[in-house]
Image (tube, rainbow, N blue to C red; front, side, top):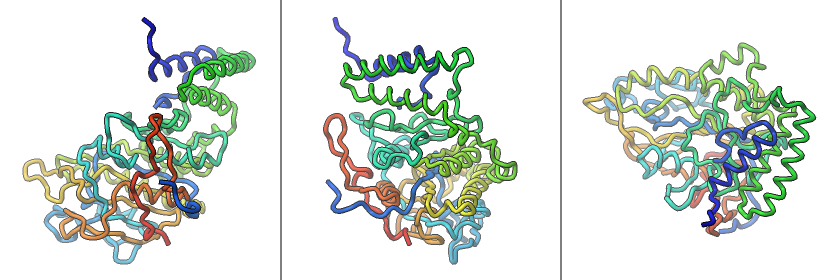
Length: 425
């Protein structure tokens, strides 16, 4: 019986084809209503999306409730933004709050990690019938990259559950960087392959690949050929140096921190300078603090506070913050009440906090609020689709632009989300 080719078998064929012909492997993970009028004026050129996985407690970070028993004895401290306080765990970010717009009225119905993270990245609920593209893939599809040699979408220390390019072609998936301190791996021509032999193999790959694409209607066949050709070009480019954070001076490296999140954010700043559109950096700590909230925060917050503050300060000092939208996101918040047995906090999608800085966002601003104990939204609820629409708006995307899935279903960049224009000056 004749076998029917699947997406997986096509992908495996192309990956083997590239490895055989070029002596290199595809980078890991790369296989992963019409708007009325003109798109909005772009305020940002690039986005750095900081993802703190596990569900970050809003009360213990950027929406403290001073003097309330729910704080567990943790203090709120003043910041450089008039009238705005944050938890004492974030003294360095307190000195950067004049750059930040806090959204203290984020709300969701997704209280399971995988579902919440999927919604945060795609603006959609997870379903068994379709995989939606993450926001970064929308950005590069509609805007492209300012640097024609570098990928426009990069994921640093990302989770394997990241939705990637979804139903978009594979070349729109983020370039995965597992170790931001190691440069771009698999990007150097093997010493056993001479440049002449490499060029010969590349020419043969183009010839055979083009014929394969003509005979194969599945659009990812062309996408993988495009990935191979772009990777071969990048291998010979001086732009590869942007991935080497050791080119930064010792003081700058120390300011960001020697941990993975620090190195990832430093790399993100270098990529922004090089014209990369969308960079996501995921913290390698797990903020799922079901046990001993105070001990967990004491251990985890110093590195994140250091790195996020360093990133904002560095971008501002280099004149990049005005054109770079930095977003801090998480899948949900955590319960105001500390568990009497575990001294931790449970999942709480009802209200939580994201923040934005730069890219035209107001500094020292608070949008929305939670109630007195941080359990419900009290004012101006904002959904994940709304915040993703806000990011798209900052970049100048038309949020009404329609793209169709392979089955013909119409989708827009942030589903039914609406930009929160009050966040912009």
